[in-house]
Image (cartoon, rainbow, N blue to C red; front, side, top):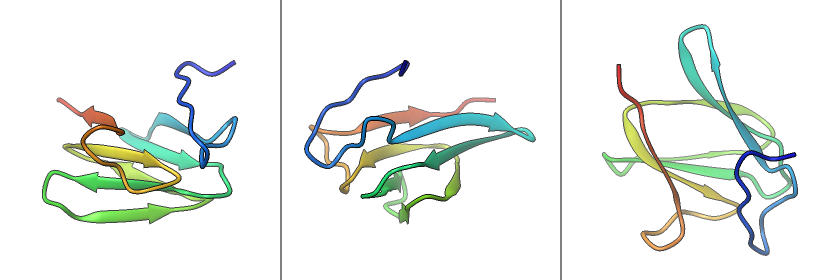
Length: 78
């Protein structure tokens, strides 16, 4: 039932979802281990069973900090 399937030891079956709400793109974490968002400016954000806006471009790590080989990359455009 997931649109994107990512496998790993720290990733839940239904780990997170991304939604457009009130003209913002939000990452909703639904997992035990949380999600990390790293922006292009290097700023790191950790969320667990909460939500955070996605802005600009960056990487998402499920259950751990993303690295160049293991990340979900995003780029938002107007």
